[in-house]
Image (cartoon, rainbow, N blue to C red; front, side):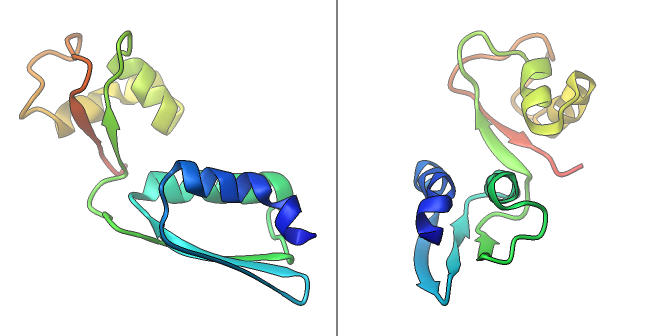
Length: 125
C-alpha cells in the first residue's frame, strides 16, 4: 500500500539510474536506499518524496548516498539550451549562469556559445 503511494519516487529513481537500489516495506514504512550520481539527483528524489509525503513523512525512510560529491550536477547540453536556462533548471535563477560559465572555463570561452552534447559541470553554490 505504501509502495503504491510512493510509486512516483520509485519510477524517478529508475529514471535517474540510481545505483545499488533497494526497496523494502516493513510495518507500513517504505524503506528505500541507493546511490545517486550527484547531489542534484538526490535533491530531486527528496523533492518528490516531500511532494507526496509532506516535509516530514513517517511512512518512508530514504537513505540516498551520492557517488560524485565534487559537483552539484553534470549536465549534457541539449539543442536550444542557454546557460541561463540551465541555471534556472538547477538553481532557479538565470543570473547563476556566470557560476556555471566559471566552472567550465576550460571548455567554454564565451557564455553565449554552448554546443549540444557538451558536458558541463554544475558547481555547488
